[in-house]
Length: 361
Ligand SMILES: Cc1cc2nc3c(=O)[nH]c(=O)nc-3n(C[C@H](O)[C@H](O)[C@H](O)COP(=O)(O)OP(=O)(O)OC[C@H]3O[C@@H](n4cnc5c(N)ncnc54)[C@H](O)[C@@H]3O)c2cc1C
Image (cartoon, rainbow, N blue to C red):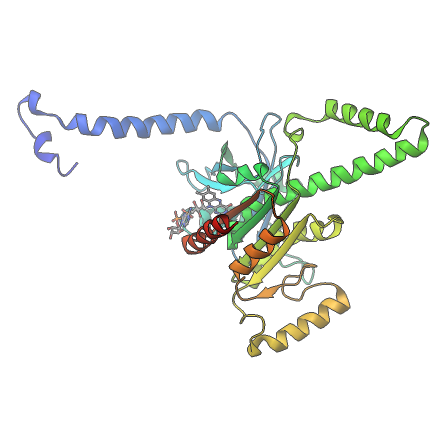
């Protein structure tokens, strides 16, 4: 605009050409605003649960509109009129497509995300003394909760996880969010298979028909009742999830799903590794005492003192070459997909290692 001021001030109408330079960006901006306005009216959501975690993360659970069909790994744009009527921000969906709600985890970074925390903190109940360190609001308080609009779902590279037999999912801090949805999806699949197997053995023992016949009946009956987004099959045989975080408080964000996986994944389809980088590497003399206390507590109570989950927390950073080499050796002749969400430096390192391993076979 400054560059074109002289053109704008031109007296002769045929020399006023500034509109040519402004027309395209203004049209694009207006088009995007209109599109967003109409798309945001496609789905109406109601907030059913809010949890505010330490480490500045707000978790929002919303009702899932009947026609809202998404794949794990996808994201939505979110607008909260109580914070800003114009700003839309992208957030990965952390619920599984089979869940009857949509959830997102929002980490406070700047003005808008801070605004979200403030807006929801007002309506959340203070934690009861000694019971929970979290601020919560559940369905009964729903009327007083700020309104939320969503636009999506939108695709992301993480949704391609279905193409691979084996997954290596690497998340740094809040970058774990797209993978939580994938893990939930895998867990739901494991539970479904388990239930089917139990139903199958039940129907075998209760009837005279052959096991082959009862299997066919079970499948076809289930297939008819399953909603569209639940009918997609998962090819994943194994998934390795590496979550690297600096703050111990972050473990609260996904504790529930981690414990659920530890309890339900009897066949060991999902392998999870938590890394806390604010502590010296494992093997370092300075973290020996911590390791001893951690080992004792885990042996006695079955719970890790750092994460509060059933998984033992590792200290320092993973040795990525070792991790990739181990997975590559274990899953020869299988398609392995490596997915990463976090800062660019580790992304580069993982990409280089993947190329190296692809070339050497
Ligand atoms: C596809 C996608 C999925 C996302 N999923 C999540 C999620 O599940 N949970 C979550 O907490 N955040 C997620 N984000 C990031 C989130 O959208 C931003 O943190 C948010 O929009 C910041 O808004 P703000 O106005 O509060 O901060 P701003 O004032 O816009 O930014 C504050 C600081 O954060 C940095 N920043 C902002 N956005 C990003 C980004 N995308 N990557 C790296 N640095 C950034 C800025 O450079 C600045 O330093 C996602 C982003 C994308 C593109």
